[in-house]
Image (spheres, rainbow, N blue to C red):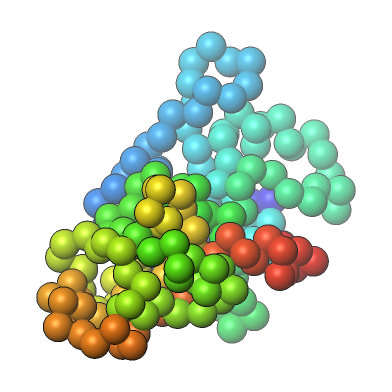
Length: 187
């Protein structure tokens, strides 16, 4: 387990910024109350076996007693680097993204299952959408009862969605909580 180098940190922060905007500072500066220390530490990003973990500094200090080959996971896995060198967020990052999301989309109950099976969101399945979303922005997808379902990339701006027919694509699927069942061996 090691710290991210400058290139890796830039890739991770760019991807997180796409979904959180200026709320990224809340993720980076969030105090950690884990561990026996009375003084709250901070969370940090660590790389282990091409996976990026969001973990408290006190937990990292205690994990130094464990050998690298014995350490399977530490903290929350938020993404992974591909063999080509690009960074992809994984579904485990949903709790962090949902708490700090800049743009949100709410689905009607009839289209929730479709999204959870890995399909894109159509205009007919859209319940609500936040203002000022542009094409290509990262959005967090919620149910109408504010349960985070996944995250996606917007295909249309908020203004374009109002004029769109019900069968037009609004959001392109990236990850959803159904992946815990569909891909349990890979997670």
